Length: 269
Image 1: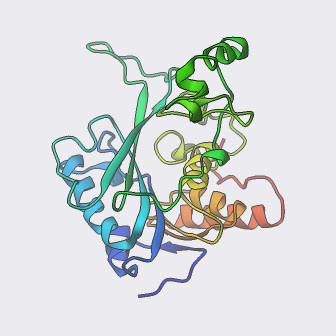
Image 2: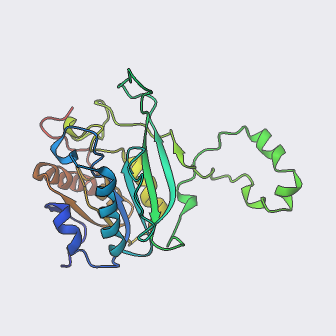
Image 3: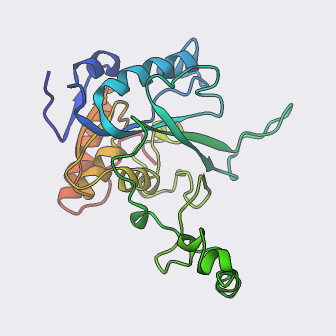
């Protein structure tokens, strides 16, 4: 089946993913079940086996060099062999020190994992200049370090100071979770478990796709990924089983087209 691009399709992603044409997708952003809450959509017997099944399916749909970003908790891909299907390049830590939940018998989990996979050995693209962040090291100290021979004339020459900023690395604490007061929040029901900040999804899309590329979002929620794709001239295919969220996503896309503010659901903040 060939899906109409730039459309949010209401249906079960497990039924729909198989109908996506093989080797047609440039980037997949998968923010699906974590296997840690009591929501019906999050109840899975084994999140590791669940994710392995997704990885197998996604591998067939990605173009060579295409990327997958898979969201989860720290153990989301432990004890499974994903290597026959995709190449894990990084485990990005999305650090959230302000989480309200506090562990009483162990240390509080203050981060999520974003697993960055590619199909094959080399990414189709990694647009570093589009995702650089401000230098945190004092400029004077940085310039002093650059005077050492290994930087000026040696193997570390590419580490020199860049006016556009530095690589964000694999620990991201500069993008905060949404709160009830966040202007982009669509629904209280989507807070923390479903809706991610646009800045977070934007970094993934800008890094691993180019204008005109096709992005697959198999668990679209309230369609943050499609909104970011549209803003940055990427094409998308999105699946979402909740018709209320599909309607909210379509309203967000329409609002973006007309330069309006986010549309909140009736139960939104």
